[in-house]
Image 1 (cartoon, rainbow, N blue to C red):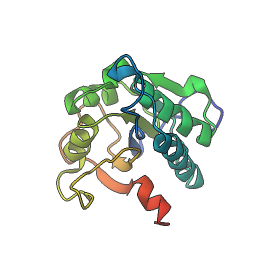
Image 2 (image 1 turned 90 degrees about the vertical axis):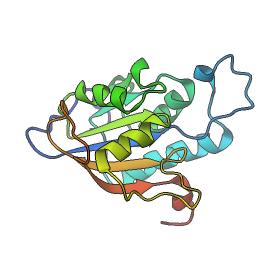
Image 3 (image 1 turned 45 degrees about the vertical axis):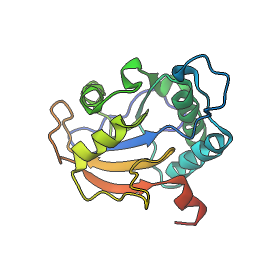
Length: 184
């Protein structure tokens, strides 16, 4: 739905969820709070690359909900630009900022029934949500991490998101920026 502002309905069919952890932020900035921390140089490089990966595969979300924290907002804006999404398609929801899995489940329950939703947020909540939805056996890094900064999880979801049960989703892909560098 590049450039459009109305969410596309999924009808009664399959739905997808895209979980994106914000890109690398700067701990050395002069930000007055955690909420105001901007992206670091690496984050400004990685965020559009994830958007380009989505664009190349035709994985345009019909609904985007993001934490309003600056680092998440900058990640969302970069991905949206790479996808050609209109700013009107983006929702910045304070409930996503540092949310746990229970809060994120409520955010998902409030999403319209579009075919694909992108949530941009933070850890540990996104990791918790991914594990709740998909169960164990998820691909961790050598250092034991799941969603590194700017990592994107693509999940096949049930049609109704009002009462999501544990292990109701299936992981379709987990993309980390370093893997894109190596050509994966």
